[in-house]
Length: 309
Image (spheres, rainbow, N blue to C red):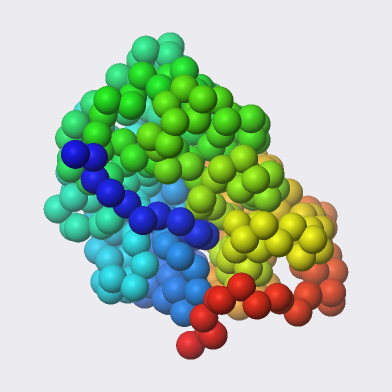
């Protein structure tokens, strides 16, 4: 039997907080997570792209897993990103995630190496075999250069622990292509902020979101409106949100999202090298987008979102 998961709704890709000397600030990261949960998000993704996974040591990743599990305290699921150079390294990290007791893992293709389709599939299969945790397969070909196509995903349908697919290629047709190949075998998640409503229309039941770090209630409301088929209301919110959602599709998305989070008083803008602070002109552009958004911040329709604690 494949593990049953009830993953749905908005799962922000949580930022990892650093001190001025770039050391890991676990307390601040835990504060970011707790604030997101209190604002009504449906789950947390830690150690993802936005969490600067590849800038973290293994010990830091484990510390973040432990902090996330403790902070969430069962209120929402916690899924940990696995991004390593080799299948063996990824499998070891997955075993650590299982030992800590997070709720699932989000596995990226093997980094750096541009794999052939059968190698891409073998990597996911190898990591999934290393643990009983439910696995979300993460596809983001613009960033990670390896494309997990619907054909590749279909070859993994026999791996019981692979339960979810996060699609960040921007091609929303793929949700239908996967369903045509394997039916409802995989829980479908949107992974690119600026096509989220389209992704939901095509069958996504969850959203791993970057910009919901800065605007968690707006993100969760947008998601629920689209899921409820309230598209007229969703479009008004989507149009307000879209200039910011586009930031999630940039190569420097982490710096942009952290800056927006900083403007909102939810975290710092600081990233670890090789990610550097945005140049002054680009920082000013993002701050101007935020000023425009805050000046026209909409009253949110009721979607059953709990009141912020």
